[in-house]
Amino acid sequence: MMMMMAATMVTCSSLFLLGLATAHASSDTVTRTSSSSPTSSSSSSTSSSSSSPRMKLSYKELQQFHGVRRFDLERSCCFSALLLDEERGRLFVGAKNFLLSLSLDNIAKQEHKIYWPAPVDWREECNWAGKDITSDCVNYVKIVHHYNRTHLYACGTGAFHPTCAFVEVGHRMEDHVFRIDPSKVEDGKGKSPYDPRHNAASVLVGDELYAGVATDLMGRDFTIFRSLGKRPSIRTEQHDSRWLNEPKFVGSFWVPESENPDDDKVFFFFRETAVEAQGLGKSTYSRIGQLCRNDMGGQRSLVNKWTTFLKTRLICSVPGADGSDTYFDELHVEKA
Ligand SMILES: *[C@@H]1O[C@H](CO)[C@@H](O)[C@H](O)[C@H]1NC(C)=O
Image 1: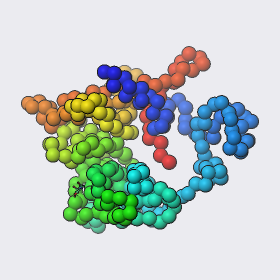
Image 2: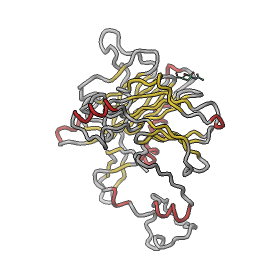
Image 3: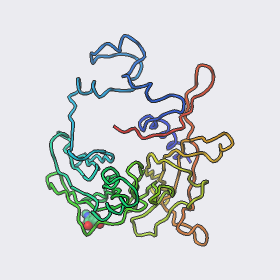
């Protein structure tokens, strides 16, 4: 119970890391850098000793004063999955048709890359289904996790045909290994989104992947899905708006509560259309969902479904001068 409190508190403070948008304030209103005082906006010195915390640093400012290095890759884009590996001095990046391994010493240096396109027949199939051949029917690598000492686990949209693979990275930095074993490529349904516009939130715990993701081509069947390990896969109840209602997944975390792995929890952060607020028109609420790692699914009912799933509204707000609070209901991932 104590741990739950801690987790929720961490949650509230890390919201700012994840980024928030409110229903009331457009994000355009915070594009200028930092402070409220008009004098500091013209000062370009680095010694800004303003008492108000800096909320935003513009890209231009970063470039000017902090020696930013930039990585570009021709015919790719959408560096949507980032995995930091300090031990190996690497940043692994999932992108359109590529998986990259960049050096933390100099990210701009052309480093290892794996070209990972979707097969031609999947691309054609995707195109027949009415999707755009160049923007939709390609492989966007959306998920990259550490799997074990030598391998990563990565998943991509695969032209609306989600696919995952084990990626060999070697034991040490000096190994310079970076490859996908073609015999270890597998179905990515319930792990990666189909649609390049969707995001999945996922976490790998032990040898199991917990993912909040759409599991169908149409992007209607959203689920929190556990797969990959030795246990049978389990998920949230299908088409039941009380479990999940048009969720947009934002992040997910594994929280061991004690020495006993039976106490381990997995938390999901998302926003969704609130069923409890239906009388008031369509409202979006920020949520935290909790699962127990030792959940095996039900015996008679809820077979292969979670039996420990709980969720609640995340209430974070700032009081306004006029006494009315602004609620942060639309939890987002802030993408660089
Ligand atoms: C890591 O996992 C891969 C894929 O299952 C396996 O081939 C490899 O032997 C594993 N490495 C270690 C060190 O366990």
